[in-house]
Image (tube, rainbow, N blue to C red; front, top):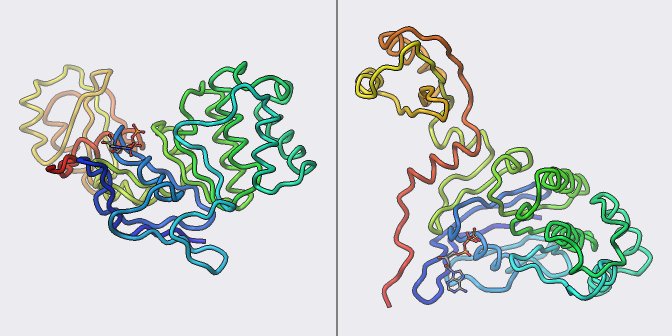
Length: 312
Ligand SMILES: Nc1ncnc2c1ncn2[C@@H]1O[C@H](COP(=O)(O)OP(=O)(O)OP(=O)(O)O)[C@@H](O)[C@H]1O
């Protein structure tokens, strides 16, 4: 299995939502689509599942020795942006109905349903109407619904949204188990700490363009910030003095008023330290790698996208 997206463009009326994006999703990986609101993630997903088509470019899904223009329905597990189960029906009525639509026999469907509901601590709610469950619990039922037929490819639009931290962790475990079962998982998310734990590779997009693409290591290299120094001075020097000394470095202050100096690579440590020592007495010094949350903020603030609006 491989999904290849080549130069895909998608516009709606006057909005150019996807502007020539290319990437590959490999079999068995957890692949994260990241980006601010309106970046074009859902537009991409809608093309991957065949709800809409690209204006330009090509999507090729290589599966079972065939090539498809979108993920075929019987191999797709989908958690759509606008969730859509039957609110009046019970949890089990919903799940068994959709499992049957996917051709699953009732006893297999029941067995798998009970397994996943148990994992999400929802087994005792299965005979209750879906609408009587909290928003987060309904979301967990939706997740179960997406995978009951054991599809090869699972696409989840914001699987963590509306979940408390404990349930977010449960979803992390759920997704890791899907991967273990051999499924390929594509998800969009805004929770960088969850993505960091899970994703094998990721694509950060902004204004319909690829900003960063690859593993966490790859994107750390692409953004050119290998590490950060965290510095505390006995007496914090003036910003202008710091700027003079650190001309070759980007720096900022964190919420504890510690100076953060970005290093392109570890080889810059000596130069940075030499300059920092000219600024005063250092009381604390730490070095750390930038996490995904910081990489995301930096990449998006550095990115100058092309305009989204096209002339009428
Ligand atoms: N059906 C539509 N008609 C017109 N414009 C649309 C439509 N769907 C999306 N857009 C526009 O396309 C751009 C990309 O939207 P999209 O929903 O793909 O972004 P997103 O990254 O999924 O955002 P979010 O994180 O908020 O869900 C936005 O400017 C949006 O307003």
